[in-house]
Length: 195
Image (spheres, rainbow, N blue to C red):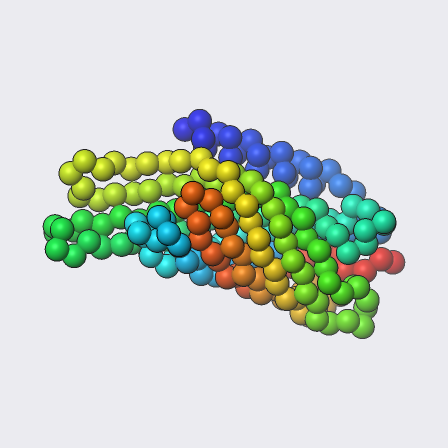
């Protein structure tokens, strides 16, 4: 319960920070809504299978000195599939879910000119991951919730559909005690160019 509280506090702080930046040419911002698949690795892959990811990303321009750099973060829920243990017993299975609350920096590789439709970015962040492991019909195991610190590394491609709407596709790797990768597609809403 305490770990979940820490994640909620960080999520609220990120929202307040992001919402507190005014809509100006000096503070361009965009919000992305996305969804896709989540693939667990290592220990997390031992107790769960491929699942889904839904998330919200928010980034804003904070410096004229670094015009291609954005600050913001990602809030996402990842639900992983069940892992069945054939031969161990009837209806023995495990699954996992992860909530990620990750402040991050995003670097745009191309200038955002009105005539430019395709863009690329890289993203690096560090934050909190709340992992819930669910075990069904195990003799000694119980459900477990853990709070981990982790690093997020990703990138993506955008395609401008309208002046304030772009499509986005992005793979994101999350390195924690329970690492996984997500590949999401979605839409970015927000100011694109200076006026």
